[in-house]
Length: 406
Image (cartoon, rainbow, N blue to C red):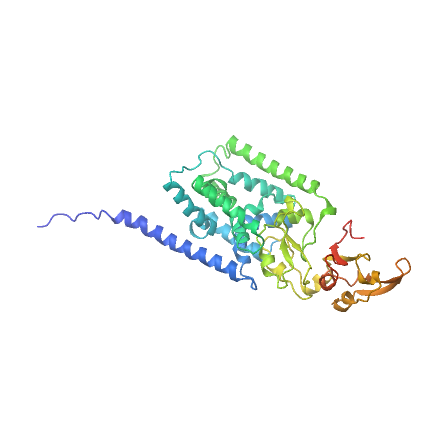
């Protein structure tokens, strides 16, 4: 008679390894899919889905803009699942988290040790959401999906710098981004903790002490600091320095906070007139979208930049409403204009799609000068794009109310 069957020594290991392999396969597929969408989706709306999946961005956008967009609903759906399954998005989908995990494993092979004390994720969440209540979500752009999207968004080479910094940090201090800094992961942890707290209250009744003093103190300090930073940012803003923004842009202080620098609007623009701001408008404006009409202009019926904005920095307008919301207003420098030099030119009037330019006689200039009808002009930039003067354009679109706009 044979003895009892010998237990399978590898069964426990197999049960652990298989889910891990499945997770690696799923995360690899998600990473490749996201990169392909970002690199090939220039003329589609698919890239907006990447950043829109973040419940952190969705919540900050809703609080700051006081509106719930279709894209925000996607992020809220992901957040709802996070209430039930802690950090499920991080474990299965997040492309930046997968890359950071891979670099962290490399760091551990070289003897690097994880950071033990630093923990900033919840502070970033509290600062940002408190600021969002005042219309300025201070650190919303630190969301990993925004950083990853911006790095592949053809915005400008500095857009890849945050991604490289995070990967370098993950090598030096393994897992520091995902476990200690990432606001999306921290926000999911907070949602999961909230769900557990509600279940505990429902099943066992309220505990004798709901919040410990350190937790309450951190929460109050984080909310207070976020509100203070948001207020200071709005007070420090100088209206005269406002750059020319894409159609649908919210007020300048709000845009600086709500814009997540994802590069979607830059990627979607068919005429390539949207580019990333670098140092010309200050650090607060870094990598936010600005307009340039050097070679092309904003098409009358185009609304693509507004359709792909996941955060609400660009409000979605129909083509009709866009025509009633001017981007800016052209100003003319007669010292540069060919008419001021007694030469013939009518390019700006010829190309204006709204017939907003006419020529009137000026006694002071003793020549015909272009006159802009602000009731017809939308600031599309066609006049500036076709102006033949070089190196400076004689007609330039400036933001409405710009102190240099005349």
